[in-house]
Length: 269
Ligand SMILES: CC(C)(COP(=O)(O)OP(=O)(O)OC[C@H]1O[C@@H](n2cnc3c(N)ncnc32)[C@H](O)[C@@H]1OP(=O)(O)O)[C@@H](O)C(=O)NCCC(=O)NCCSC(=O)C[C@@](O)(CC(=O)O)C(=O)O
Ligand SMILES: [Mg+2]
View (spheres, rainbow, N blue to C red):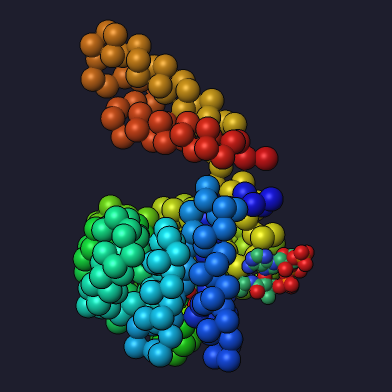
């Protein structure tokens, strides 16, 4: 909370050793019900349903009121169909509003990337899809590097999310001491259009928020665009010019997004 994350993700999958799976699930079950987490979005990465832990995780976290279930290693829409059938049953069973538990699919394989559009569009519960790099590069028989290895997957996941009207989240950056490398990666994914990134350490939160915040220059320009658009509206003009640049619908929409981002996260330092 001190670090002001957008949401908090509890991991029951690969960050938890096999011996600790039950203990971790019980801890998360209780944590989710603590008043401390009432005003922040909670996400739990459960184990795959094909493991002995996945269904137990799901039973616990849906009953405890989690906002979003993150399904790791999502390869096909059928993985999501299976998940949502269980979620609906559990919601009914525990008196939660049906549909209130949202889902995020993590794509971690070549087949997941190939199926990204079908996955992203397969359920109204999906709020976003996330690329998970470490399992993906293993599947692709390569390794994490400068991002070349993720080029196709990032483009595919991003287009799938946009086609489905949901959010796209980029990979975790594992070297928490490499601030410059993290910021280089954030700059790339921000320019590509990702909504954000999965983070593994509190030190990365402020860096990410700052990089996504618009600059003062962007905000000033967006205000001038909105003012010019309002003036054009009063004069009944469809297209207007601001310092020789054409201003029309998409430019005005972009200016509104910049101002919304500035009011949500301030101005870049
Ligand atoms: C990396 C490190 C060990 C470094 O530890 P260090 O101790 O050196 O860190 P420090 O900075 O010194 O900690 C300063 C203070 O912050 C506290 N603190 C640290 N981390 C915190 C945190 N996450 N949440 C809250 N608090 C935290 C710490 O307790 C301390 O508190 P205090 O003592 O009070 O000062 C640690 O961060 C960590 O374990 N991170 C989570 C790792 C994780 O989640 N892995 C699973 C997801 S990836 C994956 O599975 C791959 C994937 O599946 C991805 C996909 O699916 O996307 C794929 O395939 O690619
Ligand atoms: Mg993984």
